[in-house]
Length: 124
Image (cartoon, rainbow, N blue to C red; front, side, top):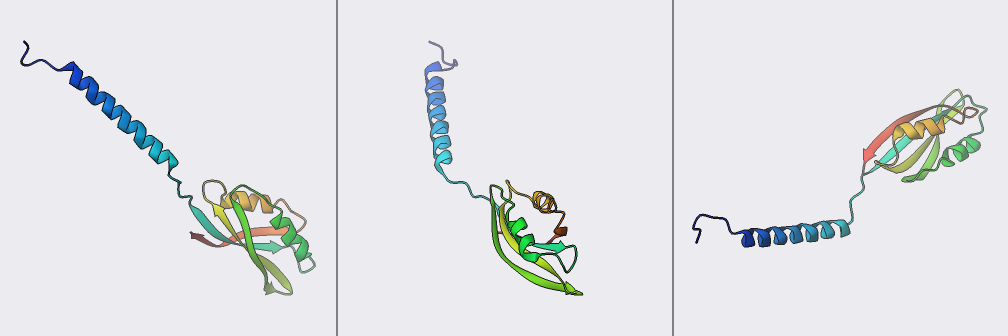
């Protein structure tokens, strides 16, 4: 009889119970929906001049499609000398869409868009 020896049967049983609990925890965690971080972005899209077709400019901006991007309201805001800029709201999922991607895609419409600025950026 070994008084100071280890009991392998109890260690094996404890290890099996631990593994089972970890497995159950992982399954429970996988079923729980994850919270997706979202942001609300207000963009200022500036045209080249006062003769730019603003309806076509807005159509071009809204044609930008990405997973995790949702376009919202828009309005034309006077800048000066008859020029108006397009202010447009969008909601993005932070891990899928960034402001750099939006600016890059919108400025591809060179005939209508001079520049794009982020007017407001709020976490939701």
